Image (cartoon, rainbow, N blue to C red):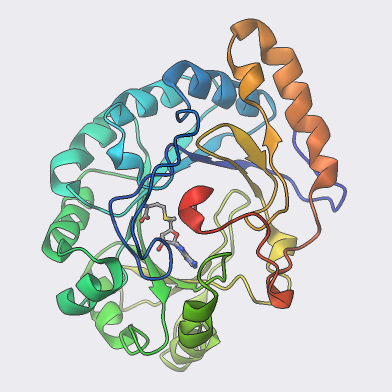
Length: 326
Ligand code: SAM
C-alpha cells in the first residue's frame, strides 16, 4: 500500500473533508454576519465523496473527519457516513458539528457508522454561548452531548475556542463537567483568518495559561497517537474526562501535522492557511479516473510548506474556517 509522506518526513494518516461551507451559526470569530451563498458550483455529491475517500484510502488513510461549515445541514449526511464507512480501509469516521438538533440526529449518525463525534461548545454558560454563537441552543447542545455519551462512540470531544474576556475563566466549570463524563474537552487557541483580524487582536489568548493551571492541578500529559488530531491531551486520576489543548501558535505545532484537507468543492488543501488549493473535482466524475486521482494527490505533497505563516499574520486564502473545513 502507498503512504502519503512529505519532504519533511511527515506522514498523512488523516483527512478532513468539508461537506458544506454553509453554517447556521454566527460565531463571532468565524461568520459573525452569517453564511451568504456565493452562487458557485454545488458541494461534493455522494458519488464524488465516495471516489475521493477511496483514493485517500488507497494512499493509506484510514481516518476521515467530516466537517464544514455545518455538516448536519446536509440532509444526506447519514448516507454520506454510510458511504464513507463502506470504503475499504476506512476504520475511523469522525464528525465535527455545532450540535444543533444533536439530540434528534446523533443516533442516526451512529447507526450509519460514525465512530467519533466532536461538538463545539464555547461556553458552559447559556448567556455567553448565545453571545458567542448568535444562537440560543445551549440546552439542546448539552443534551445532545449527554445522549452521544450513551451511544458507544470511540470518542466524544468538545471544542471550546478560548477567547479573552469571553470565556477564559471557565476552566473550573469545565473540570467539574468532565469529573463524571467520559468526554475530552479541547481548548483551541483562536486563529487569525482573513476576515477576523480586529476580533483576533481583541480576543486571542495563548493556551499555555490553561496548561499551567492543569499542571498545578496535577494533570498529566498523555502520549499522542499517530493518527490523533492536533491536541495535547491531559488526564487526571480523579476525573473521567480529559482536557486537551490545541495551540497552533506553539513552537513545533506544524512539525506534528498529520492531516490534509479537501474543501466542500473538491480542492485539496495542504495547510489550513495555505496560499493555494489543488482542484480534484474534475477527477471525481468517474470511477475510471481513480488512478490519475491517486497520483494527483500523491504528487502534490511535495508542495506542502514546513509551517504556516500565522506568526507573520499570513492567513493564506482562508477568509474564515467555515470556508475550508475547520
Ligand atoms: N460547524 C462545525 C462546528 O461548529 O464545529 C464544524 C466547522 S467549525 C469551522 C470547526 C471548529 O473550528 C469549531 O470548533 C469552531 O469553533 C472552530 N473555529 C472556527 N473558527 C476558528 C478560529 N478562527 N480559530 C479557532 N477555531 C475556530
